[in-house]
Amino acid sequence: MSAEVLITRPLPAPGASLLEAAGFRVQMNTHDRPITDTELRAGVASADALLCMLTDRIDAELLDAAPNLRVIANYAVGFDNINVAEARRRGIEVTTTPDVLTEATADLTWALMLGAARQLGAGERMVRAGQWQGWAPDQLLGQPVAGRVLGIIGMGAIGQAVARRAHGFGMAVRYFNRRRVDPTIETALGAQFLPLDELLATSDFVSLHAPRNEQSHRIIDAAALARMKSTAVLINTGRGALIDEAALVVALREGRIAAAGLDVFEREPELAEGLIELDNVVLAPHLGSASTEARASMVRLCSENIIEVLGGRPALTPAPQPS
Ligand code: DGY
Image (cartoon, rainbow, N blue to C red):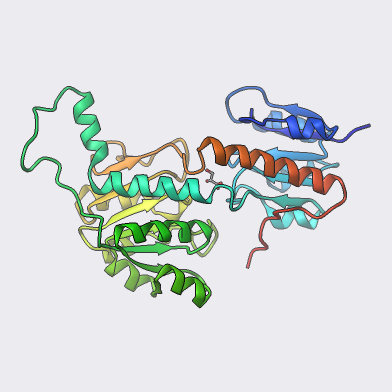
């Protein structure tokens, strides 16, 4: 009997075609909503491979219900939804989708930087509400971007792609990372390593690209926000839990920082209380990798990882070991 793959949500093109062409039996949640816990438990009972979303929680309890599972291909580069150590302890490989979404996520980061700095959200809401009375000399004045200081927290592939774009804006790039990156990368990016507190105090833009883990959990809390400039703009396209969202709402409301651009939230799709009422925040619905090209490449990479592992070969892009 051919191996069975469970896909937890309908995928964009090329969909399940690579897996079907490889001869696997594909079971797919065909509803356009996250698979329920009950459906997921029932689905993994007979699955050899699981192609899952960042909204699916894959913990020890779920793995108990998946006796045949050999590979979990996460349709995301982040993998904080999966207990990787527990899966690997059971001999189940876990894979992610690095690189193919780097440029798309860096582009979206810049969309939020520019939009938040120049009050694009507030302007759009004003125009759409029919409240625009015409040009005015002091209307929606924002923060300049060109020539300013960009502070990047998390200098992996996406952080580096964001830094590359900063050169076009003549920005000074500074970064904080758990480990300093290779000096050749620092030189190529013109990026200066700074301790976190110093980076927060001196940056005009702070952009978050760290993976979510114990060290990065709420790395931007009330104390971190207090260190930032009152004119600073905070951007998050990483994971919602990197920010203490309640503290951010207070900081934005009281003008302790100028603005924020957020693509990710701790309890998606729920928003922190008070966030939606604020005009100085641009809110996006987790669109980081949402370009047609990136999402198609993510589908291909997930499929290829499954084909490799079920074929008895090493995964192409295994989830990194926690360090
Ligand atoms: C990821 O891949 O982790 C992104 O958050 C998906 O958009």
